[in-house]
Image (cartoon, rainbow, N blue to C red; front, top):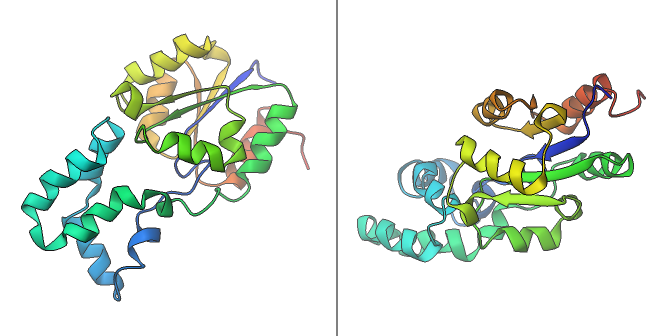
Length: 205
C-alpha cells in the first residue's frame, strides 16, 4: 500500500457539501442579486473570521454596521448555517467506509466554525468515522498555516511519510506535502478512488 497507513480528510466539499448559495437562493428571486450580495456583503473574506474562531454574533454586528439595509440576511448566515450543507459529497461515505474497513487510521483537518463542527458531526457518518479531527475555529488557526497541521500531527501521532492528505484546496495540499505527507487535490469521489487504487489502498474494480 505504498506505506500509507493514515488518511487525513478535509471536511467541507470533501466529505460534506458546503456552499452559502444553498441557503441564500431561498431569499433572492434573481441569481444575480444573490451573487452581488455574496460578493459585496457576506463575502468569503468576511466569513473566514468564523473559521478563525470569531463568533457569528460578533462578526455579524460589524458587518451590519456597514450594511444596515441587510440586517436579516446577514443574521441568517449564523442562524441557518447548516442549510449551507445539504448533504454528503456524493460517493464519499462509501469510500470512507471502505478505507475504515481496511484498517487505515482516518483523521480530519478542517477550517470550520467551532460551533458548527459538532452539529455536522452528529449528522454525517463519514465524519463520525474520523478518529481525531482538528477544527480551525477551536484552535484559532487556519489552513494553510502549518501550525494547524502540526496540531493534528501531534494529537493523532501522525507518521507524516505514511499519511495521505486530501483537500479541495490546492494551497492546503501543498502545505501538507511540505510537511512530508502525500497530497491529493480533491475534485470528486471518482478521482479520489482512482488515486486510492493507484496507491494500492483500494482494489481495482
